[in-house]
Length: 418
Image (cartoon, rainbow, N blue to C red; front, side):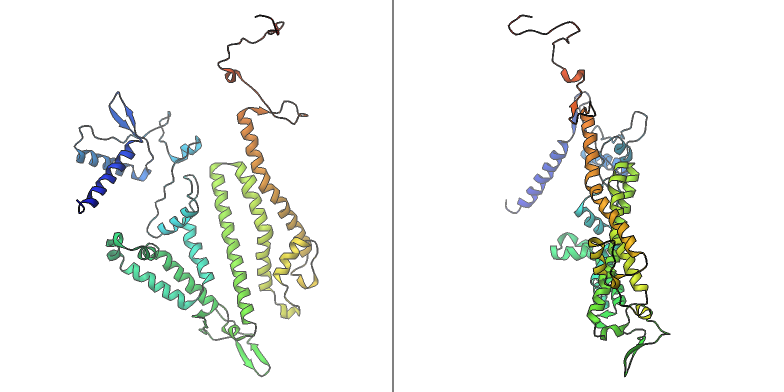
């Protein structure tokens, strides 16, 4: 009996799953059959019908199961788009391939996109590994990570046959092999930008700096073609320079990723034709992001592209610039000026950012509450009266048999009779 316990357990669980699925069906007593409604991907409708016919033949049923496509009164097929237009919610279905499947799982962990929304998984397949590479940029570590992922991909067929028997530790790298591969490629690319290999500087193209008795001097006719010049790794301010460079690079790509997210939100709002989402959510978010962090990105590129040595000026601190942006937007200290008219521009952008905060927090809840009260029948009768009154129609007094009072009639008096 103990030897057959696993077999009986599997049979009981299978029978329980079948009974649970059948409980979702409706019984039609006239036709003596079970009717169930569900959603099927359009591309797999014929495959679903074939599976039902095979299941009916295997069960020996005299009445084979039939998959009937529901249609609207006008004869159109009910799709996710038409269901969304009628206020119904269709389930989400994403035909993610082997490469996008792990990124789809990452996106679903934060929230499953609705059927009428743009799926951000293809964007995540680019941004997720690339941001990893910016954080852990090293040629040596990136190459090792690539080789580790390629070993899984090369033996993919053999490993797929034993996927069911893998331990939990083996399943993580196996299921995320393509994620690891893209992360390794991104880390190698960023390592070339940083000129780092296991923490040691690389000198692949020859430094444009050379040592002289007076100190380090740069050859004005040469520029290191790709990444940071390896001479910076031997400078006294090497750590502060490279950390500052990585921080600014992370800000640039972080703002770019947030702008991409807002672009997706705008595409969703336009697809749903929701003016409330566009003007009360997306537009103020774009204005706030670009007026504060977009301006910071512009300041980073402006600082990078300015020859401060030729101007005989000290490069301004961007941290101080951002603090002054909020504390004193209309004033620019002499050592913090990047360009002419900076104070006026900061005052304008600071005002825009200040206006968008209550816009984002209050506009959408106000209009949603107003629409909710209007749907419930609450209106303002007198503009001078700030209280809300509900208009009662005839349907709200169902069950009340008391006839309405007409002009000249009076109701029952205390102590009197009807």
